[in-house]
Image 1 (tube, rainbow, N blue to C red):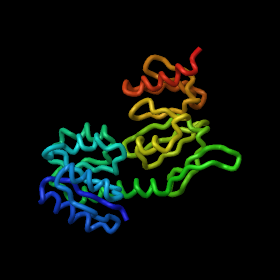
Image 2 (cartoon, rainbow, N blue to C red):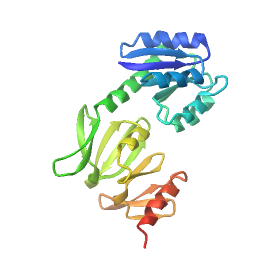
Image 3 (cartoon, rainbow, N blue to C red):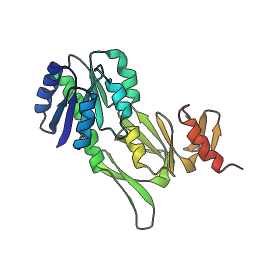
Length: 241
């Protein structure tokens, strides 16, 4: 069962989403919150998996509230204002529903969240008998073991990530970059861009705002975002002559 809270200052909007939640047996509505402060208390008291979050609310907007959370649940924004979409997705929101919300559109977003939570619950990390680190990812309706040492880089693509493996292989899985990044060992992998995580040992060179890796015998250049450059340079400088 997936625990849900609804955060909206409009009672009618709350009721619409509540009605939709009740139509999906996988979802369990824990609480309806009128503002961000109530939602903050709900997150402290309950184990919440999914939050339907309005943006325009008194005291604290949904976007500003999400920025305060260090370990937020999956978030689906609900709003009457389309101009917040880009900022919402930059905060790794799973989806962005425009009011009035149809049942069809709600179910599409909710099913996306259900798939992601199911994927998270079925993932695992561990160590093999010979000491090699690995992660299991759900792809092609099965759990696939991927060794850390085989990963060149990881590329984000909307609701999916592509794990690029040596010899030109790849694994595509329903996952967010933020979620996958949290599961990977920080000493082996570094996020260098909103859409890229690279294996540190696979970096051949750093050229300005690009890192170079070798993929299928060819040089591949990955962009380095300005918000990630400083941390990358710290790693590079530790091993610099």
